[in-house]
Length: 393
Image (cartoon, rainbow, N blue to C red; front, side, top):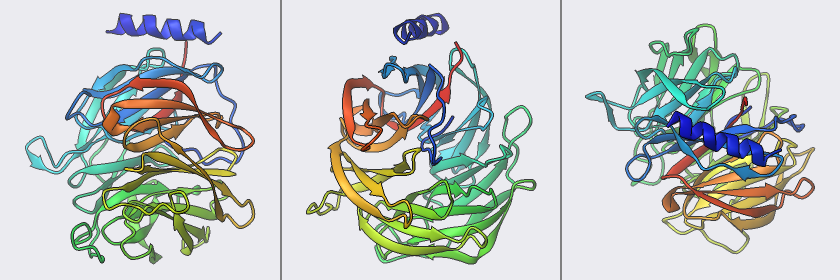
């Protein structure tokens, strides 16, 4: 496997002459000639775990993905700030004979992109759906969807995960009895100062706000302790702009985006407009669900994907107010775009189409944000998450 991978990577390098699932910096980042791209997946079908490919920003060419590590349902991935370690949720209801999912740590081979497992820790609840590494690289924070819990796992010097330093249970419900009868923590966001943690809870129609101590790995309820989304919206993922004063929440059930202003001193969120994540005149169907949200590095463009409609919508961002205005909508190049990633330069977007077992590469117009398919659609079993990392030759 390793020899075959090295050959493929060598071919990609010859054709060509960090980062995470989303980027929020206001200025483009200088990008190496080669990037590694990791794909988180579900393993109930064609996938065996986490896949890696080499990508050239100079040519837009994505090499055929290969298996980086076998692990169960690594649906969401997060990189350590030092680029040496990768963390994956194992989105399961039970793990190692115990109720709940888990989180696995990996060491990254800088040349090949292959992963070596370090250890696994319980996630603190069932069906972990999202995780992040705090900005100091001291902790992994994970949201458990079915249990409605959030957990903090300190990181050891060798990149492995220690026992949890905090587990918090959300309680309550909202207006949809089928999907909101209890808490469903869906994603975790750490603010730019590393002092506040925001947990989007689909079951509560709230964004829970915590004060965060990275040194101890402790979370304490903030004052105010939450911000509210529209009833029945179903908060899923959130992204902040580089200033930290504007945040955008994609709501899965309502197929909408809620804008917030953030008080960077108190951590409080004040809700602004809620707009459709779909084109004008298109009403969401019950089976549809908004999924991923991301800003270009310039901060001038925001993208949002919707499953069922199988598309990515492009919004312009007002530089002063942070308000969004619809620009256009593009097919995602496959079925069920659960996630997508933008390369650090803001030049390419790779969409992960879960139910067509494929990823599609789009070029981003630097002036308008318009997406154009490069014609590359590669096979990856049930892809969910896309993460970029600078590669070494």
